[in-house]
Image 1 (cartoon, rainbow, N blue to C red):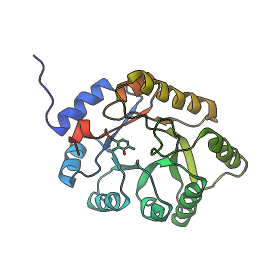
Image 2 (image 1 turned 30 degrees about the vertical axis):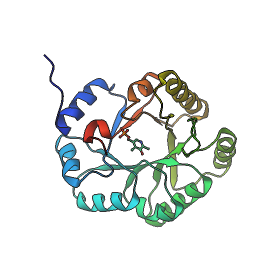
Image 3 (image 1 turned 60 degrees about the vertical axis):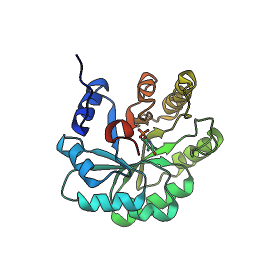
Image 4 (image 1 turned 90 degrees about the horizontal axis):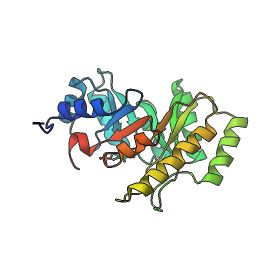
Length: 220
Ligand SMILES: *Cc1c(COP(=O)(O)O)cnc(C)c1O
């Protein structure tokens, strides 16, 4: 008889056993109280994902003495960059040159280099953010000529269409992984794709980082 995992620690343990070792698991803790994040940390899990800048900053202050790696995973507004840069281990969803320049400026002011992922628009949904291919080409070519000193691109991130059509989801993740391989200058190591509902498909298509929230912390 198999038992259904019930605690956060058990859910993390079961996921970690299913996810290949080369794939980083980001536990998406947005909207969840610090007590639940503490359970994840106690279980030895340090990669946590948040999508609201103020919430991330407040939680980072709460867990100041622990070794959390904070991932900013959602759409980021230029005027909020200043609050994210001091805390972020990785900023996942960079979708404009303006945002890159602002991250560069704020990182320079703190004497740090920020790791970021470029978000590509892969879904059949207009509300999902991210670069389209022509804009991506222009931006990456501009950066190759004039690199930003305080931003280090680590790879790409994307979100598939929210649909039961697993073939479509697979196709969208494949597009992202192919773009990652095509544009990788050699040192990129992160293709962030896959959430609670589609992470197995994402890993089959070459994800190196999954962002899983509700399957660990419960629905929001
Ligand atoms: C909320 C969120 C997730 C996690 O979603 P779940 O379906 O709860 O796993 C992953 N990525 C991004 C960008 C998110 O905003």
